Image 1 (cartoon, rainbow, N blue to C red):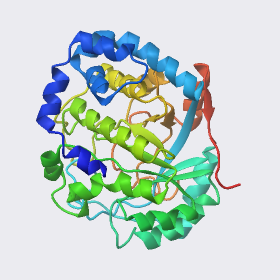
Image 2: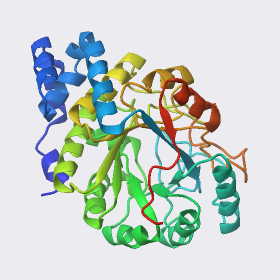
Image 3: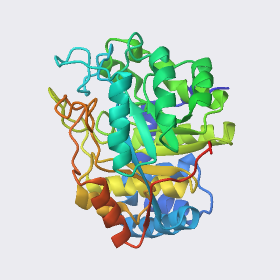
Image 4: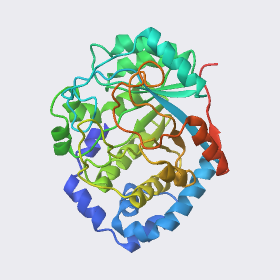
Length: 368
């Protein structure tokens, strides 16, 4: 059984109705449990849970420190290409968005590596658009070993691939893969992805299963907050996480919280999410899974990120560039989206220390 089989048993409208029907008694029952179910997660993200946010935050902090200690892992996204064959209504790299396209060469990659290493990073996330002809397996086979020589952990956020592709990349140094569903609302998904391979909702939904079967070390999940009702989308993410943790139990997992941000020719969010609601969601995920890593990017502003250090987040980016070659090769190339926290990596690390936490540049390395 794949996750798609489980997914097809649920109606979006029924799930939404169930979430909004939750009562304070449902929330209190969820908070009282030692192990929480997807049904409990519904209660924790429901409007009925809003008055319980302080209690949720305290529990989230306790559980996070119990599992992860007072640490915050730091990583840098490295954009290798903005070439893309998909039309996505919310992305600056969309095929129909007129911009200068570029893909970094081997020499340019080495320049970016030097610049990112100079900042102190040991963990990097490689990002590309989805263009198989230019940034497909041949490109990844060449790029991954270059990064693996210089960094302890290399993750990727690229187009979904086949199981055998992941099996070939893991020995080259691939540690983890982030694959966001964007939204689990199938009709709206197709509306936002009218052209390109990404328009195949089911293929994207099945990607974490292919990653689990390939034996990847870590899988990153998430939705683009703002495309649809965040409570319902997050329930399906939690349901997906629950299935993966039970099925591929040797794999680690992370959840990210990208809220829709401006880009050139941008899309306004369909659904707004307040800062308080994002805190509620982060705490709900921690109460649902003590083991999952929770990541917050520079999409969020500095003051908000500062307040979340002690509430459940375990991983942060800092000093991020969201354009190909942004660290040294081509700082002026078009960004995928605008960042909000523009502090340097050193400044963010100082903020983390100031709260009594340790910034972790290198967690561990599989290759010594």
